[in-house]
Length: 150
Length: 149
Image 1 (spheres, each protein chain N blue to C red):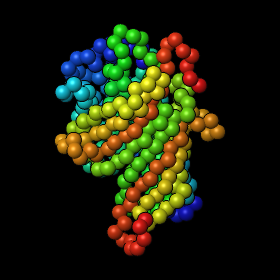
Image 2: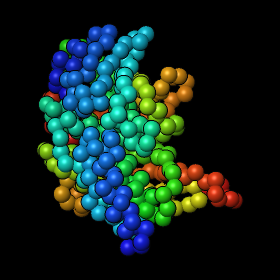
Image 3: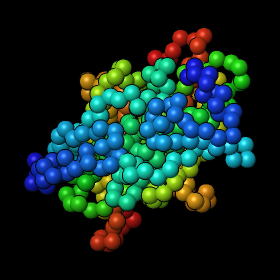
Image 4: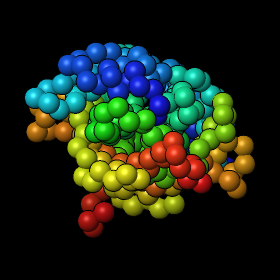
């Protein structure tokens, strides 16, 4: 790992769970590499929108994935530069197992001057059998950089 | 969703959404404004993501619920409600969420029996300046049908 990734894992890792809304959900840092991050969300009955059918609300999953790919984008940037989510698409490929802990793995696959392109998946135990896929973009303040549309 | 209490509740002019655990977590309530269903998310410190801004995930959760409840309210009265779940959710973040009340409403682009396409938006104060918008495709599983894989 680069020294920046190590720095992020050491300092930003614990910080992720202290962000107020992440803390409300119980989101926690697991590990990180140079361009990827793994986070976890242990189950809470508060995440359900339809307790009759065990249907999860999107909010907790999107919060988990947005945080995860946002952190991957920062790792890939190699600096603590402010950025904001431009868009995020989530595909729910199947329902999570009842009361499952959801693990998110996100990576930044392309970094340009202003935009980080990210993707990730969420699973409930087996990364080869995900419950959701995400793809999105983050926008950096590009004031320091010049030339080119991106 | 089979909970008839929810369908009944949505025929009221306003009320809390404590029936839905996640909506209760966000402190949501609803209001009918000129016949349209509005969801209201009061500001709370627990909704903060980056310093001084609402977490995009919480705003996304609000948008999905606006879509879901609009779909439930559009179902025929008196019929058993289907299980309604989102299959794809695409969220655009246009402006940062300030630490203040956020409102959301949704419109149905196409109301099918198996698929409902929905557009939802969230705003703070000025509806013409949405902070976040979402495009959601819901799939409906009716009680008399085997659930989709």
